[in-house]
Length: 181
Image (cartoon, rainbow, N blue to C red; front, side):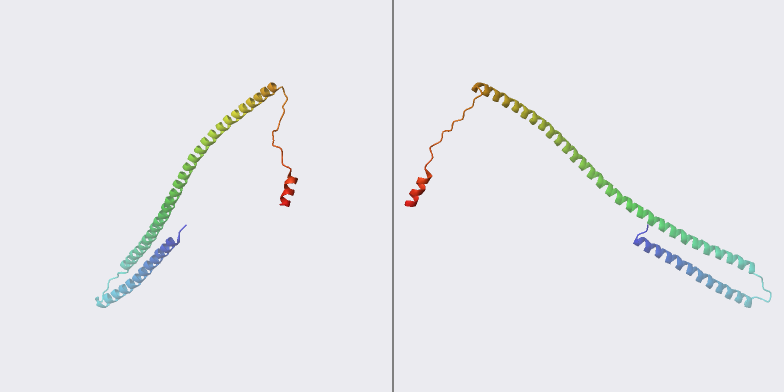
């Protein structure tokens, strides 16, 4: 589902989340140390009667835990939002690519329809021309047969063929004359 760039982005976001969580833990540790130092300082500075602040410390710890939980939840939400944006961008790019392909195919289909219409008209024209030529051929055959019948009836059915040709040369004599020369 995710391409190469999206995977890298996801890894970067996960690394950032881990970094935030490490920073939160470090800050909690430093905060605990500071609280310990503050308690020690107050214990040393305070008069012999010290007040019990343990209930406040528990409240502070609970609030700090809530802050950490809220920070982690916010980071997860940011990560989810970034993932959703990348997915939406991916789908938008796919949609735009498919739209271009669809428009190209529709253009090709329209061009092919026009070509089909032209070919259909040409075929229809050629078929009607063929029918016309067949009818003309049949009419010519009928006329030819009728003329042949009329000519045969005029000549009485006898046909004589005479060939008028010039008398041929005697080739043997011509060859002998050439040899003698």
